[in-house]
Image 1 (cartoon, one colour):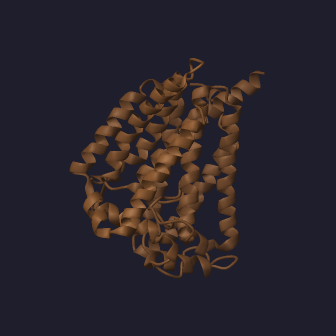
Image 2 (cartoon, helix red, strand yellow):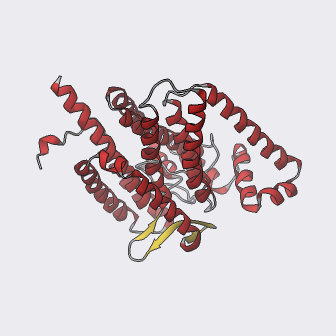
Image 3 (spheres, one colour):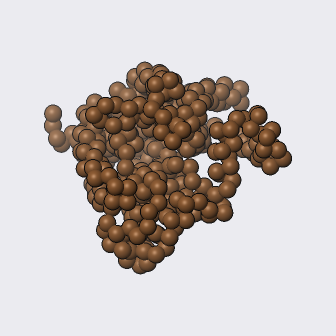
Length: 374
């Protein structure tokens, strides 16, 4: 193995190191709120395993995953199905397998990456020929929807609405850059608007009818989404108090002044903002934007079509999660349980992001070598 064959974009690597440092320090502060002493150590362990995973992915290359993506897709579907039977129930949801001595494993986190590669593969195959008719595009869209609906339904039944939204957003972004006619998006938005409007109408017209049609679980999820603008709720109110009282410089590390649920995952930004204040929050948001912009430039530079599709799916997924997590923490968006990539605690989520980084570094490696050879 020759190290010169592995060229890593240094700015992306520096960003990840900074993310890791911020994550570990903030989780160390969050664990004090919930009285758990090993979260920071576990996050360090997950990051170390993640860097090994990046190296592993760079060693076997992206082509391997593209070639066998349907096998990974089938495995992902089987795991999502088994969750409904054997999954460990936490707060009424079966999203995790419990692994003794290790922790929990959440298949939907890895399904996001599998879905990106699967869609990139079929979009690339579809665009390998030119002059598609409307009928060709319609059949292609139906194929895409069939691929996305199956994991979406299984994930929705867990229930995990937040991840379902990520699946759908990934699909939208990748279809948007696939080159199909924009009229399909107009039609999709029309149907989506009609469906959402009908659900909301039934919700306000008769809550009993809504429960009879959609069930109590879905009613509670819709009720939670529609009630977000009131800024009510113990978690949100305390999170906002912690952020707002932090001032310009914050209370300092390990000094979050008030308790709120899930400080290590969903509301990790509130912990960070209370510790490091307004200036620290600007730094983190700036670092996130810098990282995303670097990914956009990488997508522009690569000449490989399937790599463009993979990066577009990754960018769409990351930006949505970043905006949604920070937005819900400061009361601008509904609370959906979406974590902040690379910052929130979690083995499955972090390892899935590090796996994704392996794909990104493989693509950047190709771009760097192509530029050097010009």
